[in-house]
Amino acid sequence: MNAKAGMSRLLFALIASALPLLLQAQQPWPSRTVRIIATSPPGGSVDFLARSLAEDFSKSFGEAFVVETRPGANGNIGVELVVKAPPDGHMLFVAPPGPFSINAHLMSSMPFDPAADVAPVAMLGVAPLLLVVHPSVPAKNLRELLAWLRGEGADAHYASQAVASTGHLAMELLKSLAGVQAAHVPYKGSAAQATNDLLAGRVAMSFVNTSTTLQYLRDGRLRAIAVAEMKRIAAAPEIPTLAESGLPGFEATPWLGLGARAGTPLEIIYRLNDRASRALAHPEVARRAANLGIEARLLTPEEFAGFVRAESAKWADIIRRSGAKVE
Image (cartoon, rainbow, N blue to C red; front, side, top):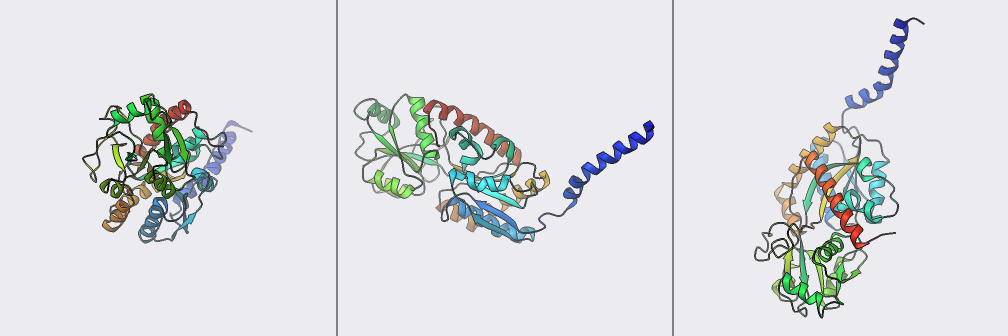
């Protein structure tokens, strides 16, 4: 075989190997029904956002977008379906931070690698948390709460919706930064039961969702200590942040995002990101999101990917120091 013939065969082999990718890139998207996997049970913020996006996307992209609910393993079950599907944008997921940036540090084994297998598509919103206490706790601000925890409140218990929830990790972050102790009482995904026990005084404190708590603050059944955001919230501007109350840089905010399998064409990711931003800006969607305690926070795909990496690094350190684990 002469050199010219060998070069021709090599060129042919390169073209043949690249052809499937070229054809895939030329195919219209979406070309069939798109499945959006909701990683939490029906009725909550994940379900609401997934269905809001599906309704808007179906109209905007001219193909059906359907929601499938696949909860479990702190979001891993639903995301595993997506990362095992072809990277063609026909299967997406909506999830809280767990499968994006937390679970890999909490769990001894993972069915996928979030950093390698997941493509962050769009930030869908944040749900600010408030640190609140039962009125029996003799503290009206963070300084007094920490003093109480170091003294007669040393055996205090705090509630969270579940192990590895943002409320759980937020309290572990506070304990680590402030050098205090409090026992964790997780409620296996039941925010309502956690709130009921907090209202009854069976637990002393908790990080809770803003929208579901303001009524209890107004009628005196709970007392607000601080906001876990970097800035005060519009719904209760009189409540200081933890950062300005003595824990500089403190931020622990639940968020929700739209994701796809890594390798999904960037053109599709950008189209989804743009359309998601438009869908969430619709007045009725924004109103219903606010009722669930969700505030818009729009990021480009690159910004969202950077945010996810930063969140992963932050919680890896807190989880390591706290010793929190999920088997």
